[in-house]
Length: 339
Ligand code: DP6
Image 1 (tube, protein in one colour):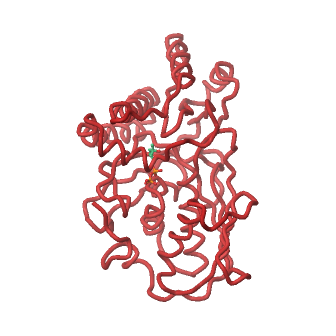
Image 2 (cartoon, protein in one colour):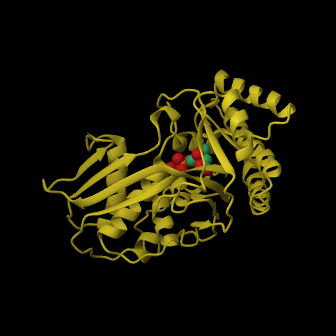
């Protein structure tokens, strides 16, 4: 299904005013996030409404900072990590399309400056933190009073996974049931887990050849295994939520790793097959499995790319680092810049 985000009754229509005030310069930070229970498949491709709930952990200080102001040149300008981006570039187009949800037909030229604190060498995409930070910066620039849940629904229109990037810690994104998406936003879980760690194992840091959006749509359209995914993902998400509440790493890790591999199985079965995982990814998984036999308590998850993310607790950090010397370790509950 596909619904115009500006259609009457949708999130944009309900939450954003018809006319905006003159913008004042504003900035916002939003963390990137890694799904432990994956979002894969949409019930509405324009509103990015998911078929199943998902649950993520945010990456602390790894994220995007976006600054929004009136454009002094009188034309829209987009800058990313210090470089001006051609407005015809698809990434600039997506950013301006998001700004247009706010501007509607008003002519308000904007200068959008984004910088990412995610190390390029980690090979992590950042559309989640990017759209969350852009949404918050626009809300602040136009002095709109909106709660985080509303910002989460607007961020979702830029990229589904951005729905979960409005908070630190663990965030659950319910699939909602309304066709207009007005019940489909993130919810921060009241769980503090200071010992929780994430390691990113860079396998291939080149830009990916197929976006998660295209890969997801292709899988939904053509994979005979996809029919089983939404029900499986819903059960996984509930059990993963329980494991997070219990702070049970073994249960959480086992479920999260199985959930990620099931998602990749739906892609491998797509026609033609889609495989983001490379032989290097499988080598990391093999090394991890052997280490688990020697009692390492660490578990893997992979998204639409070959890089591996591990979850574990503080007391396993040295073992993870000696097993994977390139690992970049994040302590998501210890370093939380203001969102
Ligand atoms: C594999 O959020 O990038 O990372 O909604 O089309 O922008 P769009 O897709 P996107 O998909 C993320 C897919 C995933 C799993 C996840 O983050 O839950």
